[in-house]
Amino acid sequence: MIIYCLLGITLLFAFFTLFLVGRRATGIGQNQSRLALAITGGIFLYLYGAWVLLSLYLKYAYAIVFIFFLITAITGSKPVETVQLKQRYRPFSWLFSLILLVLSIMYFTGSVGKNYGVANLSFPLKHGDYIVFQGGRGLPTNLFHYRRKGMVYAMDLVKLNRAGNRANKIFSSNLGDYAIFGDTVFSPCAGRVLKTAQNNPDNTPPNRKRGPTNTNQVLIATNDYYVFMCHMKMNEVFVKVGQPVTTGQPLGLVGNSGFSIEPHLHIQVQQNTHNGAPWYKEPPMHIEFDGKEYMLFERITSNQ
Image 1 (tube, rainbow, N blue to C red):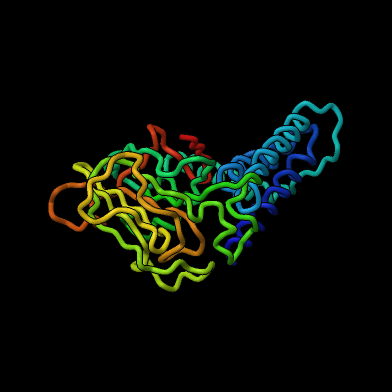
Image 2 (image 1 turned 90 degrees about the vertical axis):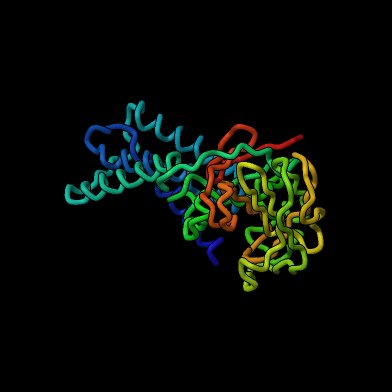
């Protein structure tokens, strides 16, 4: 199961980076490559680590412990233990450090090429803490969406419970265990409903065999762009095709229909070029919520 693999990799890498920096208290100048690997690894893990699969609060705890170990390593007067890398391993350490540094920079910059503009939307979920489960400026942060050209800036949103997790378990087959299941989706913009679907059953996690074309959805058209939202709950779409909608108007409930292994809201925006092409073949646009762009695993608090 990919969920357990991602969590396991996150925790193992966390112990590894803490080991690297925690075993050093002095003598940094003798082993710069080891410290560089620890620092770049810590930054990478803070940005990309799948902490939310257990609790988002672990991410903050890890950062505090890592910084404490790092300060101790830099300012400590006595070595805890001096473990130096063998000379032949140091080039590999520098190489991995460089790769992790580049990936950390790309977390903020992405690598998708041409920018077709930004759609500033109202956040479509209210009354709680949410997180970008998938999303970002293309590769490497939006890896799962990048396979489809029109989804390079798409986002998957989940809700956090009080424990900082998106579900009551690491992975559950019970839809009710997921904090976002049944959450109300509000229109992120004013426009006209171009397409809806609500007759597709909600998947039992992790089953997603019904595929991407069998998802409950709402498609809104504006003069500048199309906003597509899907994986909504069966028979819980509140609007009709051709209906005008205003920003903040309820559209339906979050479900788990279509190509989805667990409840979440998928949202993407395509430019409206008025050239007659299908909406999903139009150029993809960056998404901002209430004037701010959010990255992978970034928290969004909405108490409107």
